[in-house]
Image (cartoon, rainbow, N blue to C red):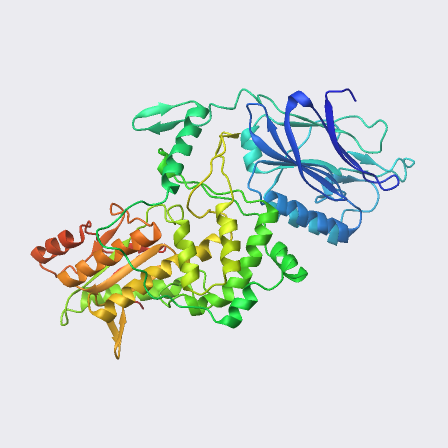
Length: 537
């Protein structure tokens, strides 16, 4: 190789295996992210082009080793980047992949290979040229031809390079045929895929769009400087025991690392953000690396057993033993009672939407909540190191923006984020409970001296109570405190007030003014289900 070439390699074992990945200096940036005996993985960024992952494979013939490789590749596919994997897979999945020798059978090896392809969601890129890539070079009566060498890609990679072609070249120095993967228009496609309309102005430049994302999120992550004439005090929060505190900070064991790694799901990918036309419409997912996710998962696994004692029963998300269906059924019962109970005091249901809930969480609020719940200082420091250390770059059409440093927020895609968020949301539960204790707000009676004031599923919030000016003022005051303490902000345009149809128009208008919210219509959607006043059957 000349001076302008760089390479990464995995040595052969005897005459078997071995991988060489080589590239020219001027081709772009190639970063090796993982290697094993059977595969070499790299992130590739072509100058002025997209970022994607290449996995070069040379599989073992042993089923046990192949299964290790399939798991390894599935985890690489979980990075949620455009992904190309190619090489010698040493397995087939169809009678068309073989000629000669024993008839094709769906052996454990071939079955495992087929299941890997299906689970990973990758697509065979096909081929041009000879049908088979390997031959045993025996005499004509014993000769066997097999298609062992392939190229697969996920849909994201194919959408970046729709003109890809794979050609089987003639076998020469090896018993395997080389694969030539040809991509058309790699450079010309970049930069014109994404048009952002901002305040009526169409932005075509990738740089302009990336800068707008940076400006928007930096302003979102800035600590909330909102002040009030009166200081806002924190409510009493549940606390962990000294025994549980010691468990949280005990030395990490090898088994915890293994459990964290093996528990990572395969084949996950972010869904579309509907039809976004503004920066605020997007919901970016953070690409956390495997090492960080192992650390984060270990912390989560230690935290989860404590949540039932820290999180009120009103919160159904991310707590063991609680289910989304519980809140859906409870919401349906509330709606049925509201619509049909004309004898008692009329009641209301208020559905609140929190604007960019994860992004608006203040870091000082996380520290305060963990401290009030009596988490050890070492644990609090671990958590803060996890959430405050990252920097971000936005990938637009495959091109990364400049790096920016956040000053707040929780990352979508971080295993810790949902659990930290519901700890923050417990502040709202405690504020509502305190308000009921002092009489400034009253929920709906559900038993002897028991009241239900709200339901929560992560950041989906329903608040219910009797219709009164006192209750409306109480709700407004509670939410104002919660916003000040946590950094959250109610999106009143997406929130709604639900009232019984039989309530007078005058009273409906008064309640709407008191809460400054739009009136919603029944049925309404909650956690993906239609909530109506009809009785469940």
